[in-house]
Image 1 (cartoon, one colour):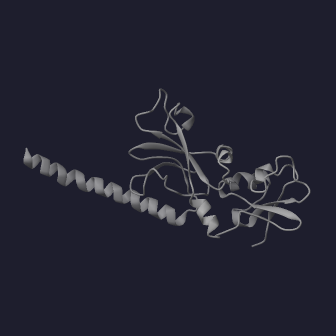
Image 2: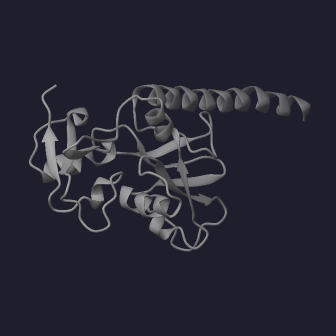
Image 3: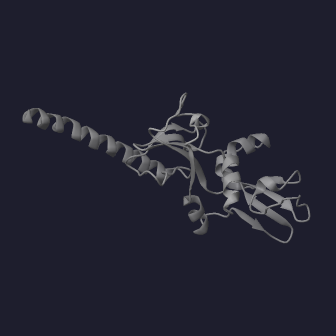
Length: 204
């Protein structure tokens, strides 16, 4: 019996360690190379497994899981609505989570709309920290205009909607002439800037 336990340990333990190492390396690489990738604060680099990635140009996860939770990345509109309650900016990564064992009937781990009443909501603050450190500006103004740098997760859809042929979001921003602010205008949320909002693709 002892020999079987030893053999089992010799085989299984290295496999578990190898799996953890692969996840750590994969997550570590994506954290270094992709601006939109993050690890939920409930998890860590060796436990988190991104189960569905964004199909566009950005390298962030849409769904993931670890040994305790399922995670689903929120849409930016949901995120904006929730964070306004806490007087926070929209430059956070918001996500849903569901504790394993709380899955309802008809649960689909790739659709958080099926996660039932025990679903929870949370957000990650890494992007806010980067903004505070001055990596790039998000909102600005001068005597004539308000400016808003496009949020990278919205880049593809907004560029297409405005018939802009570019893959470089760093050169794309919105502006609104002062005096044209609509009702409920928020200078830190370009979604509130109304019909007179303009888009600019600057030459880099």
